[in-house]
Image (cartoon, rainbow, N blue to C red):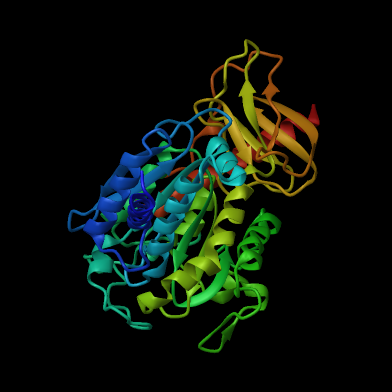
Length: 431
């Protein structure tokens, strides 16, 4: 083979690689679908593409799952998710998600950190929760609300059941799809992406009360802001400054019916909200800079799903126990965090010593010292009852609304569960 032919082959190979690279432009709904299907086709062993539902106008709500076992949950492998573009006119997040997917897939087996992440995490990425809104948005519009809502005119980030006040809005198809999705997966950690500011916001969004996990939630927001190119130091958008690039959601402004609180309270999934651009729909010439600014944060935040403690609860015969409450003293949740159908629990915690309370008719109390995360895995600690615990007690009644839009019924269920749990604990301690 002569040198001229070698150069031609090399150039063709370079062009082929260039064509595979995702461009820094805005991609409309059909383009996003094609890109996701192409990723799935090229990486079938570590991806799973599915739609969790339809928008008002019938567009699919696509989710690409990346992991060593992408189609199903594996015991001990935490579920992580990113959701973008729930406000249709806040467009940067959806492009960040596409570039993140490409980055994960193209670096698998060549970058040890990405390889570990994909091997030990099941990652769910939804580029757009509101495709109808995006298609109705005004290009290069920094401040208006055109395209913010879904096709029925509902703000999807005000449309979820709310623990702190009754939400009378009709649950929208996009919202219901996400709620159903949350019942089907054991999500541990999540973030959703918006535009119009530059800040990482943490729960609660609709209460001045401090959440029981305020230390860890604030740590999550700091993780994103501190690894961002400018969020922690240059967080000025229209004269709104956030010290360190983070804020408590309610302190910024109350949000009723928000997805962040719904995830944290009802779905056992820690979530923060990330505002990634001062302009909601900036010129596409800025997209590469937004990717460069956020790339490290996106990866570092994802790693935090491996903090704290995880494990299973077993009965006396070694059978996994579903719906056992597993919580830490002093960090009891509004709706108690419980084991899934595999008897699994995941609790995100900073390093330290904690008293664990495991209850299902009988109670297990034990102190556990949580170390720093090692090798992309939370500490594993299994609990086993030494007596026959029998059938689940009333205390294990689910707080999850399961599609019920009546927030008052959710509130009553949560209150009943808390009262029963407190009574049971007092009874056990009195023995």
